[in-house]
Image 1 (cartoon, rainbow, N blue to C red):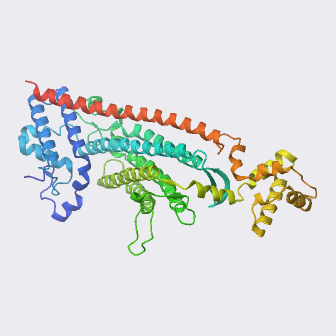
Image 2: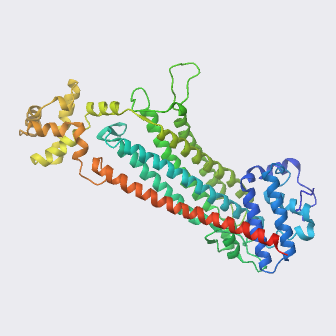
Length: 499
């Protein structure tokens, strides 16, 4: 078979090693079906615009369907002797129909707008799958939060005890973070789901192409209007990789927390055996390898984003072959992100929470000190800085003596205040107990979004409602693409069945 259908200007075929170096066939496996769909839509439009004849359209559509079926059945493999999937598919059609009919397939089109089309079609599909997996993880976080509404824990800053809070508060925090990730992807999707087809090589075509018709047949929301922009730009792909990188950074932080909290020293959490690994030599080990790999994969996605940005930064306006190298990192980061989401969803679903241990650490902590300081401001008229100085010294005294704040009484406060502030600060035993008891701290919180149990319930309800709304929006995207695919299939069948 002729593997040089585009080489009429050149005297010689590509040297073997150069051909392998230039070819993107291995990466183009991802966009095989999209290339067929795009080609069918383009040729339907060509017929409707009076550019090709109906009998030629029928033969081209039938040939493409045959190629699709052979590939799905495993009877056709992409050949590395071709530069890309576009050349491969056209060559298959030419072999079946000849140049007189099959040679019309590429009328008014360039590989430049063709590949941009295929990448956008595959990317929107992958973004939808990623969005669905993301919402599943958020739902598992919500379920876990519901089961741990009153699970007391220490909240950390600088990896040090900060304030007393609730584990449900932590879980909902990442629910909010991940919903922002969803919205970033959703916003990116709007810019991805635009058709570049009809831009030709860069400047457009002299054929009377109906760009809006092909966009409609393929389920796009519109077109990339400027033909130079349509073939030159890869910012839509870079933006997608950027959104994925941010998502993976967020997943990595959750994973890091879980790795730390599942250690023997913390013992807050235990991973299900299905998500842990043993040691080859130490019989007692239960390693959180799934979580560790999520962290590593986050680094990988950051690398793919850098790869794409660095590849495009020096490309002059117009299509250059450099842009071919943005496809592999794009598919890689999307694949790894979806896998990480699925694994973390399973981890959260099966997570064992050691509520007793979390409570023990909270009760032993000095993290109720901020509550005591704020209580003194409200109850005694001290400025916050005075209260901060006094409670700070009180904590120092307890640490030096190996005590907890709950081991003290108001007399210790009154004695120390005389020394530090020059006046005695006296409060009741009952109030002192309320201010230093860690388990009472969350209920005393009064700000929106705090660890107050009532706030947790309110935020959970609000987040659940938002999840429902985002699922509906995702379903609308999915249904639009599904309807477009059905419409294209029906249109193809109708032309194939026509006399």
